Amino acid sequence: MSISTLKNLRQYLHQNPEIAGEESATAEKISAFFANLQPDQIIHNLGGNGLAFIFKGKNPGPRSLFRAELDALPIQETGEPNYKSQTNGKAHLCGHDGHMTIICGLGEKLAAQRPENGEVVLLFQPSEETGEGASRILGDPQFQQIKPDYAFALHNLPGFPLHQLVTRKGTFAAGSTGLTISLTGKTSHAAHPDAGINPAFAIAKLIQILPKLPGKLKTFALVTVIHAEIGRLAFGTSAGKGSLSLTIRAFDQNDLEGLIEMITEEAKRISSAEKLGCEFSFVESFAVSKNDPKAAEIAEGVMKVLGLDIIDKSEPFRWSEDFGLFSQSCPAYLFGLGSGENCPQLHEPTYDFPDEIIKTGVRIFEGIARKVNG
Image 1 (cartoon, rainbow, N blue to C red):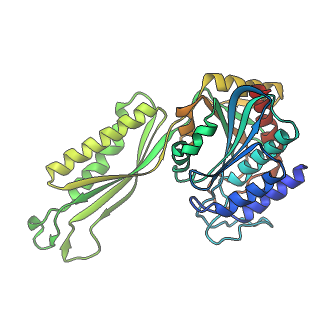
Image 2: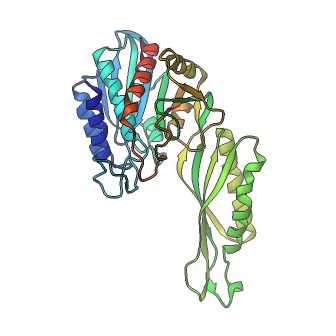
Image 3: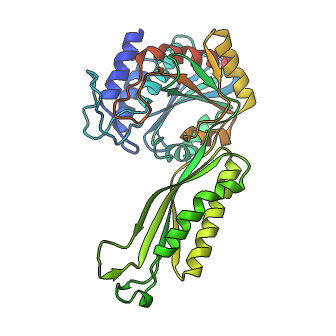
């Protein structure tokens, strides 16, 4: 199959985006593509709308897994490609359409020449953007059939030259989580605030204290206040309820977990002193994406053999990727593929995945698959 066919597939996926948890038509399109490739085994409805296609070798050997993401973003596209999103308020503005296409291209290579040893699993993961997909896949009983010895993934990176590879040993991308602290006091008349318990003072203290907590850690961590709410717009009323929402991130998984504990303890201490009820809810939790030394050696060895332009990044990326959870379950490796210095940033409404890097992605993944599985 030609690069133009893959390009058409990518543009079709771009035109028909589905957000986290809704990816059924995308999964059907991918299934239809693989029907002609006759994989040895197919797993449907993996962790939701997820799919896995397995290509088996003649001899026993390791199992390698290559992952792409099915979901788009709930953002209106404002760019004007001739294959612009046809779904209002939803668009592939992170490049998952391109990542899927690269894995489809790898499927073609494996169909044309099966691996010698072990198995190669091509995984299409749902709900990456919300940080829910990886945990659902790892928790699905069907995952035991494809539990890998190695897992690999890439992410396109605007701001880096086309085709340049961005590598890193150890942490590649931060772990993060969203946290909402809900405080409950007692509503009263605004003329008699002493008759109630207003959470405003506690929230003011938390806003000042919590962002400073990362200073207690040795490695990079960050607490960002993203939303605060106290009562409602009623001038005769002293508020009885309030909430504070934060994004917490760190380069080290233990630091991330320690920081969450510090925040919750501090919130409990302040709310208790203010006689407030305190509840916590977590959303969009992403594990730290940590590159395994052995998996890195395999992937980076292939990149060098292919003679590609490689840059080793000194610092991890501050954003998070749901692939991080795979790195806790097996030796894993995530790398970046440059999508152009002038490419709009990820999640920007004019972003569009550059089709010219599809071939580069396929070449690297095929090289890794042949290295691991012969």
